[in-house]
Length: 58
Image (tube, rainbow, N blue to C red; front, top):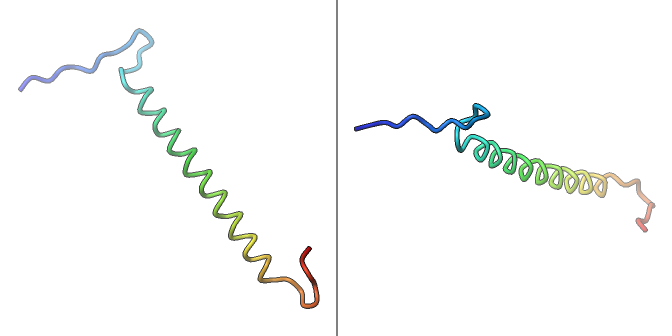
């Protein structure tokens, strides 16, 4: 079995490396967005449960 060295571009990066990093950044962005949305929903639910008696939400 012959192994081929990975192609290296002129800037010194291996071919495919930027695409891999791009995919990781995209996944991170998706995960952080979902985390923030979920935390906001949780905070809203907690606030609804801690309203003083006699107060009516507008």
